[in-house]
Image (cartoon, rainbow over all chains, first blue to last red; front, top):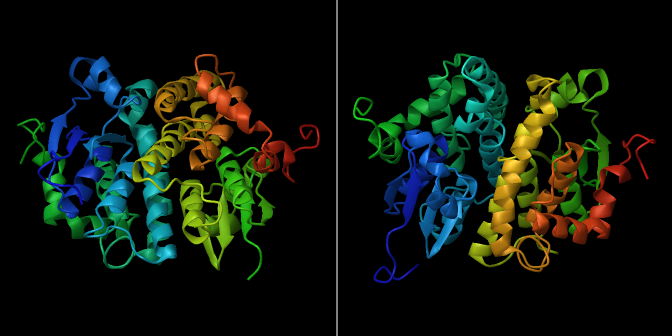
Length: 220
Length: 214
């Protein structure tokens, strides 16, 4: 572990409603790693993520980015795996190789199979008229597959009875599904896990409505 | 236990990543070809849906289990077959490898995946693909300017190289202008004749159409 006198708190570049930022916020909270937030508005002035200064932080011009241990990390799954490797307390991955594979499968199904297709920048490209149907299509397709996988892997949570990185990815994606009015009734296991974690302190603290950049009219 | 079985399509970049990794780690495997074209796509049939509920390739049957999602498969191989490692030891370098992998696997490829292009439509698919590949490559080129040695991260082949080479092939398929990406091109050229990459190339696959195979 790093010397706390030398090291500053990690800094997370985050947008309140970004599901990718939210995944990392949950993981940081679960592992009890204190951090500061630098809010990046994806809306103001065409999106602060595109400004020259932030492009130096993250060349993909996305959130989240995490400044930690003197380095800047991007890509939410990468960040979460880095935290697992360097801060092994409160592990978010099982020990067993196959169970680890199942966690990674769920994470990738969300992080490459669903979210990139309903990402803000893609929806802008798709256009206002078609974006709702487009988002519903890809989220539904992904959730159908995840529900099937969960039927073999889920215990109390996505994989067994301990919270893993899969849960960190799932909850924000369910929120997005609701935003786009996806019919979630075909996905009872997904709904059950989401409900189970709703009131978990780490998840509550990471929720968009708890974020410093959450618009006052939205915050609870 | 029998040899691992990889469900693969010759031109699928995600299948290709795993083929490269299996070859680099000298893990013998059999291929079950899944045509993404025939009859609307064999990946959608009931039998294959039992293998992979996302109805995609690749899937890998190994050690009595079925694994899906190419990055997951590659990390599983790293964890269970540590010979010929494809990840550095250093935590930050490992992070850089994962960054490049994710930029490709979530930042580029899903947006030019066959099923998405069908949805986007014949008229718009070329411009759409070029847009997302160019955007992603711009960011990767920038990252590589700080991480690349002989390969993507330093001087040893890693999972990042396994992801990059197939994506460059896709970029060429969609006529993306690659001149702004000299580091990407250099690494791709460097690996072109590596035996593990050659054996994994679409043109070397059992389901590659004869008119395409070299």
